[in-house]
Image 1: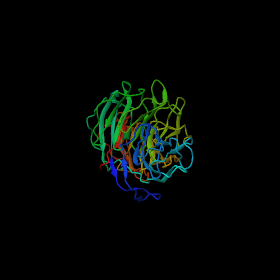
Image 2: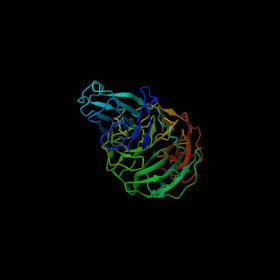
Image 3: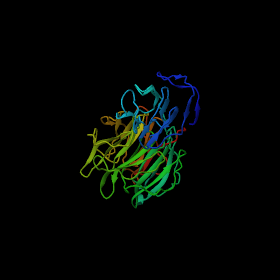
Image 4: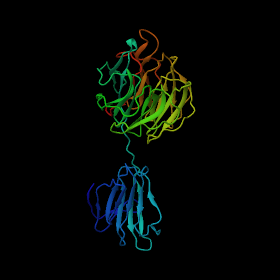
Length: 425
């Protein structure tokens, strides 16, 4: 924003009050340091770094400076005020003055030599934009079991949970990969087995179109999990390289995968993950070097993974997980094909086992759809030719699993993955 704001200033109550001469809004500041000028206003963008703001070395009573949080990021990267030899609310500039609240705007007025710079107002915008819910989803990739063939086909899911027929795949055919939503309305498939472990990724746009392979970043691995976090980012975690690992790779809101981050928690594979709460995620279950486990690891809205939390429910691997209800999650099914689920609250608390009707499957996939519901699909049930299925099971927006499976659409397969995409129904 640029231009002159004529004859106004923020009043102490947050209202607009008159002031002679107006304020000139300057270009957005992204640097780590800036020297500001009286009677100017500044948007301070601390997305990538904190910022130290040096006030003028000389001022007259009535001089004014406004500082505003451009990207609602001051809680992550604060601003620090250097009063440059003048007093700040009566204290010398040897004192540290930080502002570290998202959405904050500070109106500084110079009151004179006795008190110096004083915040005439220090207000916080309560507006927190709510991202539209993801409406559609897709299942993609996997293994046919018969002949050991990997595939790259996809099956789109509309906002009512109806699964479409096979669409010829894009990218390297592979299995035992992971997927997650990112950028709010897009998805990413990553890693897996394609003859050997790979680290390549394929982005999915908000129309469900899968892009060509992108050379991978980080350790090639399989049997990992992925989930969205922080409203528009994603995380891949854990898995199996030459041995089980606990490392993670963050994905930014443009779908760019970052380098390996040393893992937190027990190294394991065959786990699953989903988002929950306000921009958080959870990894759960899987198999360590010694046994299947029911432990979980929470992920905060900055992508930081917490240590192991003692598990709830049946220890297992080869399941799936998805978010539902807008802010909760569900883990589903076990290796003996009993249909066991565990709900996750909006604070990350995992509930006890719930056994639901119908035949289960393992090595399946799950994703959210329709804004607030979930769907499990495909997998291995040990019956019929090859033992793979293409049936799906829906989960309501209150976490109730359907009592019967939906007849399968598309090619039966297992070791696939799934993710939500699109704000449009």
